[in-house]
Length: 472
Image (cartoon, rainbow, N blue to C red):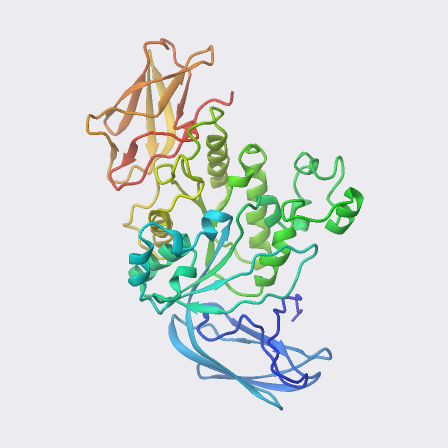
């Protein structure tokens, strides 16, 4: 089997002759269930190594450079297990290994945001007795070329440790574990202030239309970052060029089997939404290709924010995120009611993680009776001066969340392309809207603001997703 060069930073165990394992193999780790378990490491060239794990025994022989690997049989969820590696000079023992589901949680600062800083953090930490939830926090760094090494160790969820867990990832894992009793591993590979381009490999980026690459290399494909930086006579920063963060924070993980991906990113692409759908679509295909798996992607849509800027830049980004649903196996978590108009980092990560977990439970764990998706625009009909809007994903039925029954967030326009706030009502599980200022409506928008106040939900508590029917 090809090495694929996915060799993690090896733990120094004193002298060169001793067999070693990647640093990612540490006490308390979680391995993906129902997939072959790959174990690899270093030893003396041609050395024979014994591997013992969960009543399996295999022998490996290091190649001429000292690299060795084995693939153990897939296992059901369970544990704890112990991994023993026996070389000619030493033995390694890794304890408290669980078999469960491993989720890669990636993106920028709102995914990076730790439990220490969420709403009611002290209460959440006090109650965090979930030893079958573990996390691996990937160090934040960038590289000019793909790297194979990473230095990180697993943390078991406890009141003492959970403060260092990603808040969104922890509350996601907590809900999934409580419902399934399956051990959950979280790989938190996130970095605040990053753009989607830097999380995409150079190889994949070069498959995009040239118009997406012109901001870097006008009229030509991307060349290696070192050449780009030399031409520009500049020192690299993480967002300067595609692949820089991917090289350091995703590439080293590719040999580690995972269940799926939670993606919470986009803040740093606000103001440049038009290319975002193509870039995120490219990144999803890139990661799936490198993992050789149709990984499910759960995309957390940006929450409400910025009540000052009149340009709907955040609405445009949410719209760009929603368009990625055209890619199979992708899902959208709507959070337009969970933000803070004055804080880029809303602290209510509990509901964000919960909504992501509902979707994963529905689609990945067979809980088909769980209503997990927000209402989405399906079609509109024009009847005189009124517009009738039908939604999908209505669950137990639509509802207007207002003590007075007043519908908010809808605007309509006529041929003059001028939008006016609409009046409306809920009738037969459809929305009927109108405006005295628009006798002949042709287009509708919902929640098309940075900090929207739309109040349409399904009765299961999930807010309707923004939409527009125009392309003006």
